[in-house]
Length: 305
Image 1 (cartoon, rainbow, N blue to C red):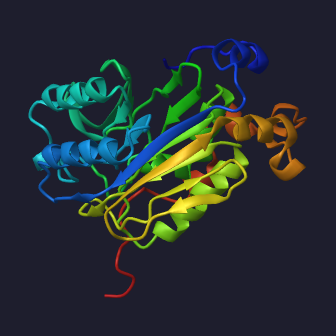
Image 2: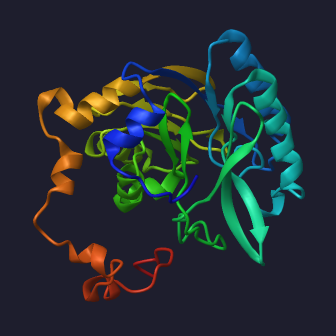
């Protein structure tokens, strides 16, 4: 589902997610991504390994661009064939699968695209990365549609890819639609990984949600994947080696924090709802004379010749 109206938090939550003590086991897979892709077979092995070791797993999440790597030249020739592989795995093991993301071409434009597959093997949602990592992710078009999906009797989930999370308006939109768990595949191999980890923690506590952040290795990133809970606490953080990390998400904690505040303190979503100020940034889609003065978005030029 995407962009469906939410009629009152209590009403939809009581109808769809009746238990406040709901647990949901998500396994992130931090694994190598070859620079020239062709990684679907290796991903299959890791998924099979995951369900063999952790038979109670409910969802498996891979990193951004895990199937085919970061090079446009190595994009899948037949994305639907790759999707069919992951659909079959989801149906075989009765689990949710988010196979990272991959480049697709539509109407002459390249998108960084992800899918959500349910335990029946059906693709229930598609998402295009909204904020390509420009100027470095040049040639990738921006998506415009948010993705929100429900896990029946569990909770409401949303999808965000890598640089999207640096723009809190994206998470604001998702959580305003009821999202309780943010799935966040990333490919970060740069020196700002520590900053990104801080952003994951801040996002979790600012929006009272879980953030499941899965990075890759080699051409897929520097690892250090993590999960943060709605109090901002890091539940688990990987090192820089291959790792399968299962985390038992507690949806009851999300609902408690949203009702009562983190540790009984700030109830941030309610405060935003009840604000008196009119935020003009949100009224004009971020238009700003000052921002215009910053110049074009391009790679840094040499300061001294």
